[in-house]
Length: 310
Ligand code: ADP
Ligand code: MG
Image: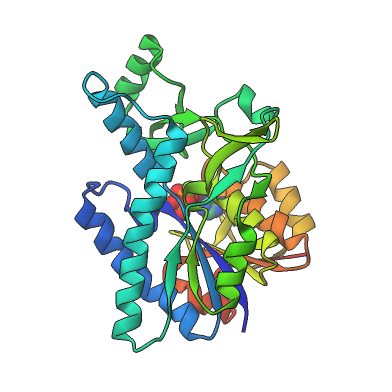
């Protein structure tokens, strides 16, 4: 029996190009739940963390549009909201999947704050994409009006970017651990966690978005998990991704992967944080996987995905 932390990509909740209705997100998670349930059925203990890029981006936009009537909330509070809404969608779908498959499992969603450092270098340059994609024309307009920082995202268009400091400490990690050790499925650190800084001993939310892959790695380390699985919409990590000479990585050692990072094979904001998160966890002598949600079980059986080891 392995203790596994899975990081569920935003694509599993909202497919790119799909309308962000509640129903669409709910239905996507219904499908994702079948794959997550398989991991548990195979006899593993599971902690689920998830992205919130599109969702928190939409909330930011909703707040912007409604600002004349309803005061805007800080982004960290909106991340807390998405932990609740996405957590609910995941929890209910998993619960129903367990019922349908005759599995006796409790599942619980925890609001999770994650401590970051106020002196993190990341506060000098916003890098984390959130929200919808903007086209070239909109991009130029937003830049001209100086509305918010915006950058290109993996050749798929332009997106708003926010500060993305490193996760330093998962608050309540002991509680996540005792719940999962007791056989419960735990949903925690959604959206990378609610970022807080500690000043004069006091915690305070800070406007940033922590990368969910890095947070998941930190969480996996904090609860002494055996495996970190980063579940996304591609089956493998590739070298020269999207080019004619692209090459799939099956099993890769940390040192080798670090060299590929230096060679610039992974886009920041998408594959790079996954690779860095996987490296970080594997450095502790544990296994990291980057794989497709639909092939999570095949990956655990060594038949799919990219495996990262020390
Ligand atoms: P998630 O929502 O699961 O976090 P992302 O969109 O952030 O997913 O990251 C996955 C995407 O990373 C893939 O769909 C792919 O387009 C992109 N990508 C960038 N570089 C690579 C690479 N070297 N190998 C595989 N995928 C890559
Ligand atoms: Mg992502």
